[in-house]
Length: 244
Image 1 (cartoon, rainbow, N blue to C red):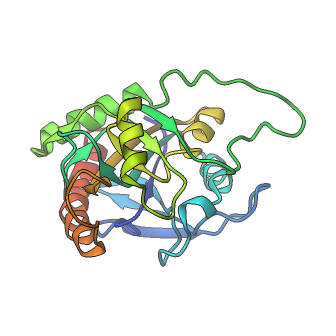
Image 2 (tube, rainbow, N blue to C red):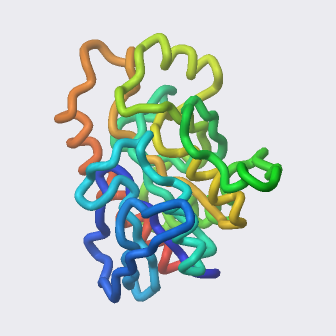
């Protein structure tokens, strides 16, 4: 397996068990990435880590320079990306603190720089299956080895943020077939595909989506669920790198 990168999202701005070797600050033709690229060892394997929202967490989902992030990873000769993302659960199985490995995505975001091919050429990529089946299979196997229950499929709906959604928006998304709602899945997945990088997502469910429970969604609830979900994600990632 080629060089591996992990993109950390909300709740995973650093990998506690990563033995840091070096840090690279990279400038790309598309601007500055969210943070320095950290090279380290996780379970004896080399991994490059990038904090998607910056370190400290300060960049809103719609302000992330996705093109610079993905281009920087390509420049570092990364071939495989595992992207961690905090999401909301829509369908009954997607309970808070649970982990899902989505197999499809629907993009509701807008106004983001979503392609590398916009100035001097038109290039169409096949995006029928947005996530690498090889990486997904290995993540599912790693979860089994680590004794972590996950959902092996699901459709991720990407909204604009940074606000959370209305109950009516979630109802529409559920009617569209979404199981999860997040804010960072696109254009990240498509940009990786454009550069020929294998990409898969570990979605950590932080809360029920709007309208799925009574009352408001609170940050205290989100933080509590993320604490448990990200702890399981760390174990999943260690099992993943051990197997590959």
